[in-house]
Amino acid sequence: MNPFAAALPVIDRVFGESVGYDGAGLAEPTDIMVIWSDVAGEPFMGAGATVRTVFCEIRKEKLPGRPTKTDVITRDGVLWSPIDIRDADDVSAWVLIAERAA
Image (cartoon, rainbow, N blue to C red; front, side):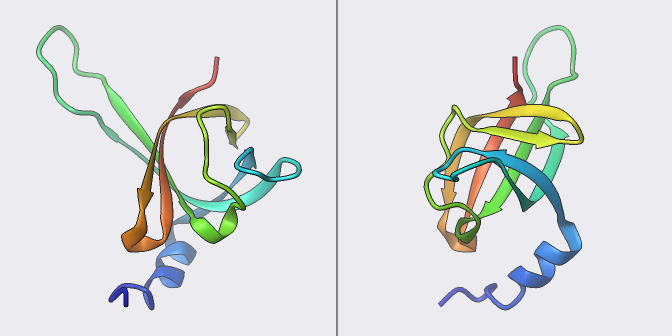
């Protein structure tokens, strides 16, 4: 049993926001609640220090299938594409690293 299971709905309510999601087996683009995070990226050697990492945490029950790199997330009118998908079993979520869609 997950010791954090009771806290997950509270965390979702406090930090969650609505985004549009298209993919992962959804029949049509749908608004779902996610936890969005935009943080400093991993440090690197070289000029510039402006790397950002954008994460999107989605509860598994919100999507009928596993997210893919062809899915599209719409947040505040900006389109995002997953570039890495992680299965976070400990919190029953998909964690997507995203970039602005081309």
